[in-house]
Image (cartoon, rainbow, N blue to C red; front, side, top):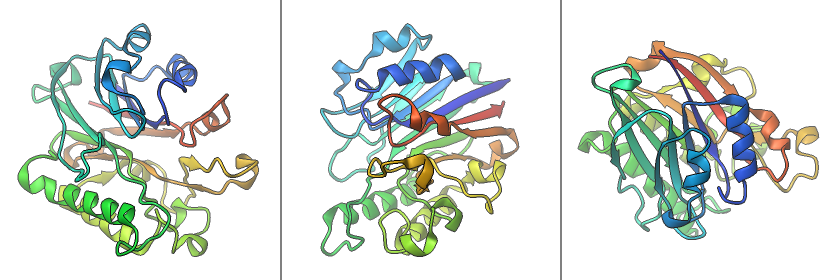
Length: 271
């Protein structure tokens, strides 16, 4: 069966609800994973999103900052919230779908919002960067303690790292800019290897091709400048590598009314 799954840093779900409705109306994904929802659980627009066909909604939010949510048309059998953040931020949510996801063992979906890391790539003088590296270290260690399962699993979210030279508009210009520094890219690779994850986006879109999911609000004409970065990711476990049928970056969403600075990434799996 085909399963369509979207990941999107929405940068305030209540503020961007009109474009969430637009995206869902145009693309009809089975699962939507949102990051940076920026609202406590009791203020999440659950009723509005259920009206769009997502009967099963799980949120992990906090007032004004961070927050992740999973919207599903399929039943959710179980929910986990991993302890990846030393500051207690709401940055992870995992749901396991039942047999409706095409297998008796179900399918686990991890939704992450990795800390951005501030402006200075030095953990000695920038605690935000130190926090980011610590968070990644916790993600790397997680497969060993069972928290981050990687069998019949998908990991998506705003991981706030653009690992490849073709994931940024200029490798040379961004080598010392947070999100593309060598220390972050090295940590990113360690997390992937620890869980034996497959980069589904680059499995479908050649690594030689420029690929972005984020364009800064600071650019007066983001489309003309096209100075983007691939900060949003879709990983799959080894047993799902052959199931990845298609990956689409919905670039036009960056030009919608009152947009997020990130755009949705839509993955199709044949389960």
